[in-house]
Length: 319
Image (cartoon, rainbow, N blue to C red; front, side, top):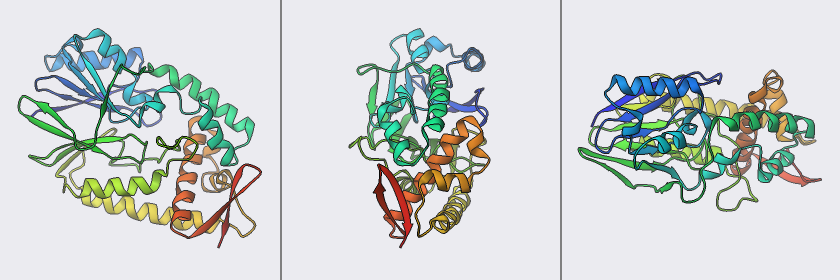
C-alpha cells in the first residue's frame, strides 16, 4: 500500500496541513485541506505530480472536522465521480461552527468567559467557518471504530481516537504498523484538547483530556513504527513522543492545580494566568480556554480539586 504525503497551505499559524493520498484502488484522500484557492491549487498540482486528477478520487476520509483538514472535502466530492466522504458520527457537530452554536456559547458561559470575549471568539469563528462547507445528513458515511477500509492491496483499520475532538480518528496499516493520526499525534507540538459538547449528551461537556490520554495509550498498543501526523514531519520514534506528551500533560496538571485557590477560580481565570499573552490574539483565546477547561476537568475527575456552580458558572476550589 502506497501512502503519499501532500503538504497543503493553510491560513493558520500552525502552517501547512498534511493530506495523504492512498494510491491504491479505490483512490483515497485522508483529509483535504482548507477551502481556499491556494489550497485547492496546491492539492491539484501535487496530485498531478503523482499521476492523479482530483476527479479520480473515490473516497475522502476525514481524521476530524476542523477547517484545515476538512474544508475542501465537499468540493473534491462534487468534482469527482462517485466519491464518498467518511467522517466519524461524533464529529459532524464541528462542521457547523464551534463557537456559532448555542451549546458552545453555554460552554463558554460556564467557563466564566465574559460576553465581550465570547463575541470576539464567535466573530472569528464565523470567518473561519467560511473555510469549509457543512455536510448535511446523508452527505457522508459514518466511520466506526475498528472498521476496515478495504483497498486492492490491503486495508486500513479505523481507530476512534477522541481527545483533540470527540470524533477524531486514526488509521492503522497493521501489516507494517504505520498509522495516520491527524492531529492526535504531532511531532513538534502537543495537540490542544478542544472544548466541545458531549456528542451523547450535548448539554454536558466532552471530557477531552481524559479521552485523549486513553487514545494515546490505544495508539501505543499498536507499537507504531511510522506515524503520519496532520502537521509537520512523520514520527519514527513514537515512544519518545508518547513520553514527552505524558510529561508535558503532567507538568501542566501541576500548574493548573496550583492556580486553583480556596476562594475559587473559573476556567477563564486559569486561562488568563496560564496564557496571559494568548488572550490578546484571535484564535488563541479559544485554544487557551479549551486547554484550561480540559485540565480542570481532568483534575476534578482525578479528585485533585472540587467544582461547584455559582450563578451558572463553574467555580473550581482547592479541596
